[in-house]
Amino acid sequence: MTDHVQTSGQLGTTASSALQRNRVLRNTYALLAITLLPTAVGAWFGMSTGITRTLGPMLSIMLFLGGMIAFQVAIHRYRNSGVGVALLMAFTFFMGVMLSRLLGIVLSMGNGTTLVMGAFASTAAVFAVMATLATVIKRDISGMGSWLFVGMIAALVGSLIGMLLGSPTLMLAMIALSTMVFSLYMLYDVKNIVDGGETNYIVATTHLYISIFAVFQNLLALFGIMGGDD
Image 1 (cartoon, rainbow, N blue to C red):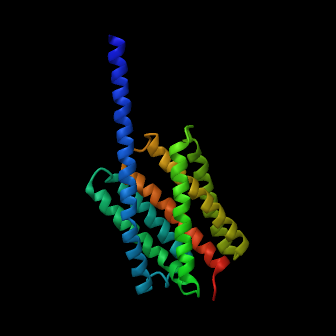
Image 2: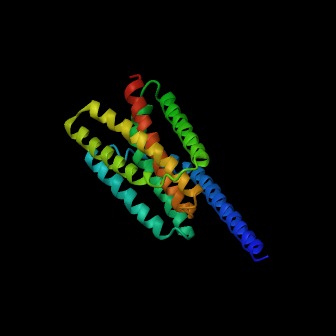
């Protein structure tokens, strides 16, 4: 009798935990879809005002990284309130503004609209594949996080070196590395939700948004370099 009660309790706890994980995943996906709007508005604002065109490459990178880190810290602090959602919306608007320079350059090409749509569709496909894999992979991949962080730092440092040296080959290699790293970050972040490692959907959305944004930005740059028509 006691064993039966204990087994029932364990099953109830497991079911409750599964429901919570599913709820976090649903809320994350819903909030992620909403972030597309402030990102698009931010990109439109940036292109309309030309606010990022006056910034040099190094200043743009410093502003981008500084703003991203500051927003992440603030979002994490207010992750359990509506303020966290508002900060996330402000963050995605900021990211849209920072994207506007590259977006404007690509759209000025003869086939710019096609390139943007191609980068968007490719990013969506990558996310769909990684999200699906995260739900079917049974093994623990939490240890992958440290390797991905190293890869991200390597891509960032390599990009800065390539920019300083003016090396297109190194820049292309770092774009490819960054795309691979952040694609795997999508898998890592969704799997973390599925396994119950991340229980706050605002934080989960922030992490996934950064990965998706990075992949889209990289693919947009790559498509612009490789397939742009002047």
